[in-house]
Structures are given as C-alpha cells and as structure tokens.
Image 1: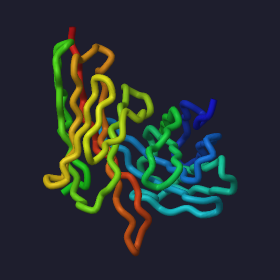
Image 2: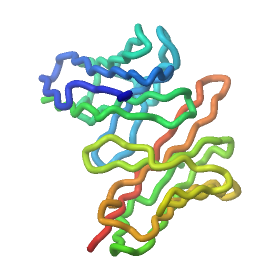
Image 3: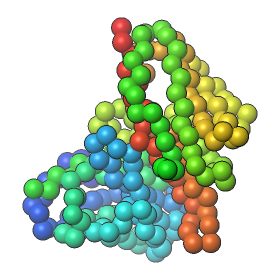
Length: 112
Length: 114
C-alpha cells in the first residue's frame, strides 16, 4: 500500500543535540512538507519542497534544516538552535501545492 | 487577523443530532478548501474537499460561501466515532514572492455524547 512513513514514533533527546526525523513516501508525490503541532494549536509549516534538490522555508523555519536528495525522502533536522523543539512533527506529501495533503503518523519529539 | 480562523469549541452534541460549524478565511483569492479530521494524538486525515457548489459525502456536507469568505461543515446523525477535531484548510495563493501553500486552522473540537 502507498503511504508516508515517519520514524521514529517517539524520540527523546537532550538539549543541545541535533536530531534528524525521517520521512519516506511511496506515493510518487512531488511535493513534501514538514509541519509542527503544539498542544491546542494548529499546524505550522516548517519547510516544504516541490521538487528534488529544492526546498523553501515555511513560516517557522528557524532552527530547522531539510534536504531533498530523492523524491521519496524529506528528512528534517532539528538543530540545537531551535529554542522550543518539543512538539509533534508531521510530514506530508501531495501531488501539487494546492492538492490535498497525505500525512505520516508523526514523530513526538521530547527534548529535556 | 489570522488567515484561517475556527471556533475551537468544544461542540457537545448528543448522539444522533446535527452539528455545524464554520471556518473563515482572509484571502479572497484562495481557491482550494478542505476539511480534515484529527483524532487525539494522531495525524490529520482528509475528510473532504470543498467545492464551489457545495458537496456531500454521506452524513457530511461542506459548503463554500465566497462572498462572506467562509466554509462550513455539517454533520448529520452524529455518531460517537465522529468525536474529533476538525481542521479547516485553505490555500494561500502563489505570489511573486512565494509559492502558494495550504494554511491550517487551529481546529474545532466536536464531542458526541451518548
């Protein structure tokens, strides 16, 4: 079955460490996204990519980095510069920028 | 003003009743509209797209009002399993400075009670 896989589901890190969240899709979608969700809040866009080797900052890109070396993969690195990294991170993909998003099941990151 | 605004609720609905709620958007040039459903601590899932003429999918009806810039979702004959947070999604059209992208509302919580 086609879908989006995020790993791991839960991740714990110490403050000051960089951490990379994995996102893989086999839907053959061109566009991929990373969102962050905090309790009681909506989704906020971190980074997005429309094609391989190209990506754009979203609304809250500071302290994050991404790469898009393959169509299927869009990993997100949460760096030590991100002031409040503890959150629920969601990866999504779509056929195009205004098409419905398909989400992975998310990674809960806790930084202490 | 937020680009996409929703009443956070909760809307407490007896089983079998009808519930409806709206989502307002600020950009009159928006063209794509969706409703997503999110269960507690899970990822959002597409419930339905919203078309200009309005559309229905079983017990769910979505409407678009361009003049007043809002979309609505109506749930008939509510089931306990309809309890969730419903997210409104509206596209931010492309400009000379940036690609278009989808903007999410913070969600409306619906609680269906026995």
